[in-house]
Image (cartoon, rainbow, N blue to C red):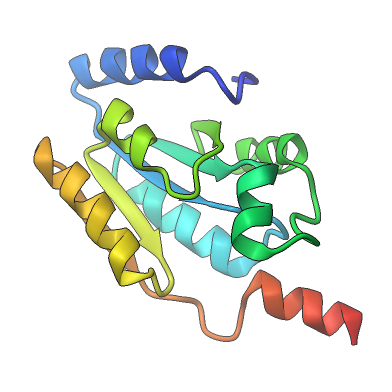
Length: 156
């Protein structure tokens, strides 16, 4: 699936899969410079259900969140890379800082948070996910690995 912004199509896809009894898992992030921490989270997320949807922060939302020098790779490149990873079934690019609207529309059975999620963000996401009977799963951070650290090492 190459259409990374077709939310209506994705909602329809999920509804069809749910009617077939499939469990939908959602996770999200910037995925700017893909590293082993990302792969770990994506693989663990995929094992939690049947279909893994990855919400990808748009270039503009990454700039707001990470600063003017980010992202290193544009959103379409990041989406294509994510879409090539075994276990990732669909990638959707979103412009908001948090995937709250995606969660409201997609209603995944499980929403996975990786690393050290910011409590107030998880609270908002948890309220949405639990409102329709879903659940939040937090996976541990892979120690010593972050895109920010990789960029700093390259600059040094």
